[in-house]
Image (spheres, rainbow, N blue to C red):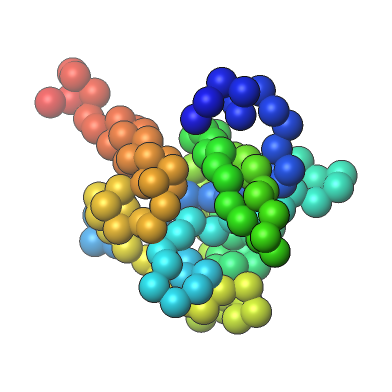
Length: 154
């Protein structure tokens, strides 16, 4: 991304979550299908008066049906897309989140076509958007670091 783009205020600002849950000892993340054939992380606009963390938690709940606890900020993506013939510059900040409660069957069907769990190890290849694949790789490194035994435990 060009330096001027990084310094320009975005037209849209969103927040999202990488929700981690363990199944059989392996970390999985929740992904959504916003449209046919697209695999993405849950995210959405930060509303007026809302912090990015609050928006991420709300958007995860709306798009997946899950209640989560934010752990740490993972980073952000910035990109251009076209809507109605107009170029839109968007910034999305992502947070690593811990699953707390809920079921994927409770996702908002007006927001996304579906929600599912995939192994975290597969996310950097399977997610549709390059920026989100990088965010998933960062989440994978953090989760591995936090679950690795200490040097004196090996």
